[in-house]
Length: 142
Image: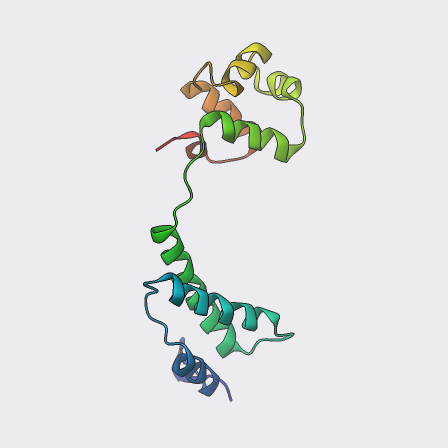
């Protein structure tokens, strides 16, 4: 038995979970060295053909700790509105002309946005968000 139920809806971890905890405790990651060790363990667990529920639970929590450290220690800088629009166009594999037609934003306006000569307006953000099926917040530069 890998999990035991102590009361309805509450599951206690099994022995494999505690083996993993003893090998690499689930604590906040505070250095790149700790990050490297955590990532190596994640890779090992992901390489398993099948994971036990204990391994899956441990992997989920360790993944959250890795993400938290990377977001704090190595944040990815936000791109410009133009870079985001260019990415979305390329990712959807559509032409600028098609985007203009579907969003009812002039092709010349999209060109000016892509070249950085013009900022995206609120109404354009809405049109692009609807067309690309993304949250309008992707266009908010911080």
